[in-house]
Image (cartoon, rainbow, N blue to C red; front, side, top):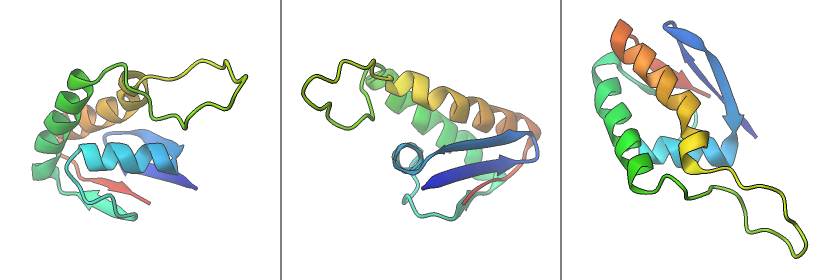
Length: 100
């Protein structure tokens, strides 16, 4: 499953569903899809996400590796960066954020 984040203030962002749902929950939302944040709620959600990333920047959202799988893991900080940028742009512009 893919989840698309939309706001008039930024380009559309598409993420894998499991990663996106985790990030949505870190923003303080229930994790339901589809969902939305009103413009006045975006700054608080952005701060919650930034705080969660700052507390565990090297954590990964990757599934447990299989034996012999030595592919690199992507940190929470890297996974969250595009969404943080989208939320920052929406907060600056006073725009809503929706995902589906």
